[in-house]
Length: 240
Image: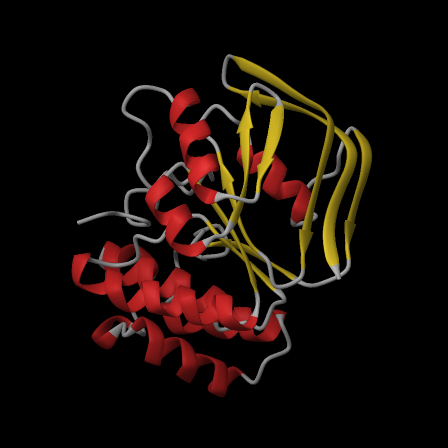
């Protein structure tokens, strides 16, 4: 069971920057722990959208033989005018889960406290961050896509790092990031994306060294590559 891109061409537009991936080949085996390393101009959101079937390649073929999550903790699935509980119940219905059981699992992990029945726009950003992560992780997938390890507040980081490790013990993970430290913590192989190319490494030290050499000065620590709702983007994936 795999995810495979074969001879894929995809044109990406990042504002004024135009980028084309041509003849892109990559393969992710079931259970693998893979990092996609790239800076904000690498167009990784477009590549992940191909993997998630949210977009189609201009040319080539994308094959998926196991289930894949959406990017976690992405906030695009949130209805900002509904409560956390209502959003969790929506996800449960969408993935044919028992609503009450799923909500209980999300609550136990996210610990929203008094904000469970509060509209998302009125929730503290660390609560929203924990909720977005938990709602994704509590759905069963063969492969989970993570875009950040900075969940909640500083005091939450060790607990959620343990959860990512637990997830990696039962499923594959794809960690999409510019944060080399997180990539090395959770992954044992990587693709480094730059200038329309993807270079594969089965050694994370070598991948980190190569990425550091091409990364822009200063880098983007734990960069989230995905567009978000303007009213929520400051609330999610925030490092306190």
